[in-house]
Image (cartoon, rainbow, N blue to C red; front, side):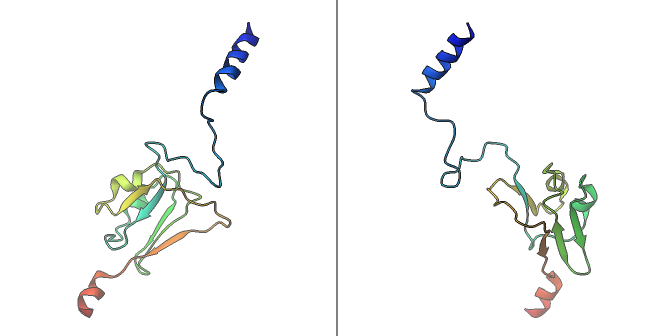
Length: 121
């Protein structure tokens, strides 16, 4: 009985499109609902630190004096909590493909000072 099922699956797959792709040359489209990685719009960020306080994995670091916002992608669990709690909506989940990391590093975003931009104008 089991061999009939296996034979039917094998015979059926002869006429279907293959499920796999040639990975480096072809990429499957991102499935709906894929969270991806965190992107920060530095021009809208006010460095309030709410995202860092609510991050369950402690992956986000906000330094107000240095005006930097950093995320450790190896600690991030892609839960989206930081995106939901951001008061300025400057954080987004980007479902785009990210290349494989060759070294462990944090992604640092330098946030421009809005007061300096006003005085320079």
